[in-house]
Image 1: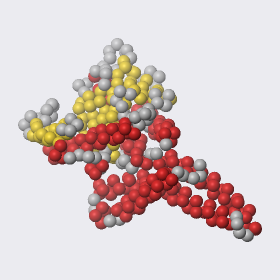
Image 2: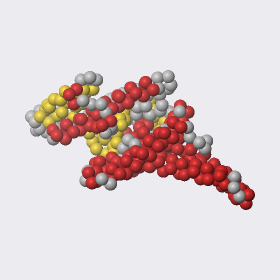
Image 3: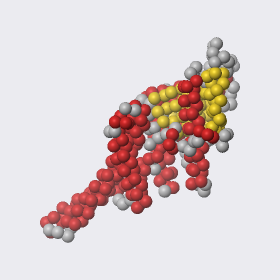
Image 4: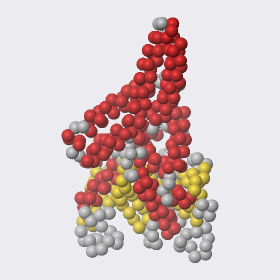
Length: 358
């Protein structure tokens, strides 16, 4: 396809305008003095540039085609040269148009530069908590390899190690585009460290991946949130049950609750709690919009459903089996954080499904 539908051209023009606005903002003194805003806009600029640059190449190609077509009506000596050039330009335009459509279906994902990732122990008792801890370490290694920033939000340790629940924030270019496919149930088959008879057990942990919105992207009225400051609970030293640092938020219209007591600072706990509340509320609003748009078709991969088993990690066979791809990957490499080959295939599958739905 060398041409693009009018609705896609309108969307691409809109993205090109946004790209110019972001570039202008990055040069403004108000933004350059705000390091967090610079980081957010830089991530958005990089995401937009992946689409805007080839789109502008495509528009330049269209203009060159028009000039070559005009030469066909001119001097006879130039006609053959114009025909050859036009053929080459049309081949290039087809490749650019196909690439643009693939990039466009991921444009919204690429623009999200940060996310909340939650890992929770499932079935399997203490081994499930150990498994949740292994998964969290796998994601930490993957994030480190990509140069992403990771911040602990809430960690609840298991009795024999690992985590009953862990919530982290991940920020960096491409974080959501890649980790968005990790939502679901992760099953492991191995001999647990807690097993004395050497028997293989099956345990699970669930992963939820929530895109973290900017404050302007989520409909959150502070008046709808009930905030309570309490003393922390659980192990933690002398401050526990004596100093009011834990923050408990309830979004009354939806019933979404967030509790944060990860630090001894009430201010830090409040900031983290509101951050997590915005992410959970945004994910609910996004899911409702997506359900309304996709009511008549199957949910796409990477939907984040906790009930969906997406991968099985088989220690005996040294493989990780992704059920959506029906393919095996080397277990040791995966657990060391080498997820990119698998994620690239998930992106390819997702792109094909999204293009088919256009």
